[in-house]
Length: 278
Image (tube, rainbow, N blue to C red; front, top):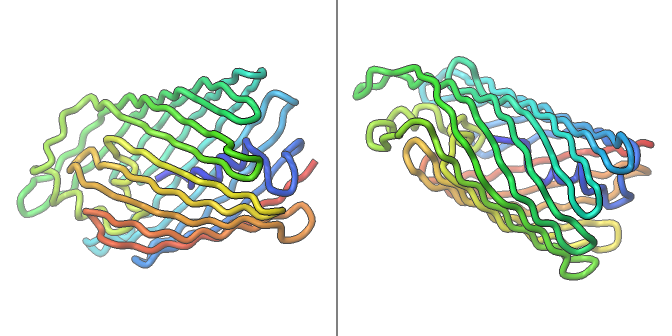
């Protein structure tokens, strides 16, 4: 699972307090009702008026159904270059547990943006290594495969205080998964929203609403994704609240709920701090 998308959007969109014209540093934690835990750090640097560099690193620990612990890491870097009204991004990421499932990703987008509208086309290439554990019905298997993802992103400012956003991504895999054969193995390594399989998806879509009130920002996001291995469905709702804490520092709280075919209902909470420098 990637760093929460609203964190990455903050890196390129600026804070409630001020537009980022120097650098941003952030750190936070996320926990859920299945004892999953994730810690994250992120940074952004304005190279000039048109170019912004952002990076993030997170680590999480999940106890699997087998009783062993899976330690996951996610690292991401992205460059955004904007020449009004067009721009592009290029990025790379690594995610996973090398003893179970990991991926190396390359991505890019081209976008149009003005004061009210942002519209982007996105592409992502993912290179996976997967070790499916042995079950009573399956002897286990290790294999490599890849995927091409194509998507779009849309954001529109209804007023100066209200934004609405939409996004969608569809992946085409180099292998043909057989859901009936993989279901038992998938359940062994997916017990939480921070689990590995949430990074191996067939498609995802999200709808977001953002409301700015003074120096405070409220966010509501609904997202849904389908697993590539077993075609399971997960629906998720998140409410977030961002406000100034002290000078040049914001704090953000997010509370959400997942309804998943794989791991049932899970509640999650995150807290992040952001510092803006010049």
